[in-house]
Length: 171
Image (cartoon, rainbow, N blue to C red; front, side, top):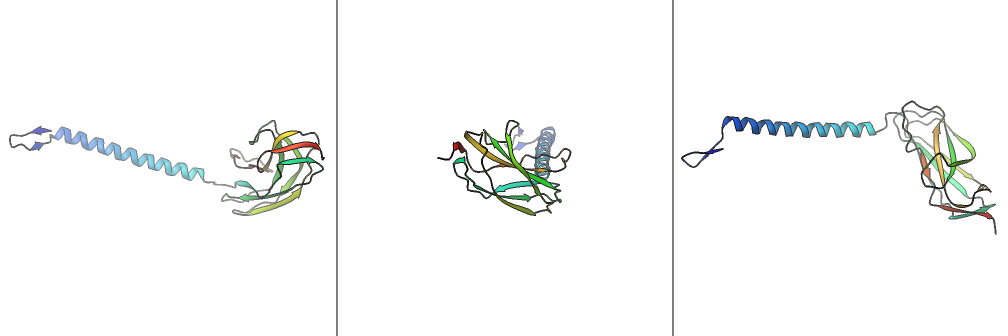
């Protein structure tokens, strides 16, 4: 800007064009970022079947051999497409997240195909394995019968409550 003899500021055309160009670039960048966020949000929503396990159990903090606690679960299809057959599997883990070192126990429970927003309820008593001692977590996973290529299954497993102390014989 240049101060004129009258004391007013006059803007040269070069600076005016440069300011307009910068303003346009900032507005375009903001619009692109908003569009990118919207696409990421839409991509995060399930386009296919998406099974989620929800626990309804209140498991004890200590289990002995011979105890028969009840597990109550709900498997829900939160996706927008029909889910095919799947199976529930129970694991004993040292940590609260599913890992390769977790031990599976008990039979797999067959889950019928679920429509979008459909659910499957399951309730069963189980006997703790006799060769497990110490603090462990019970994790249940809903695994599809057919593995869909490229489909992430991050939310298919759920830890049932907090850590459970497995002891030997009841006493």
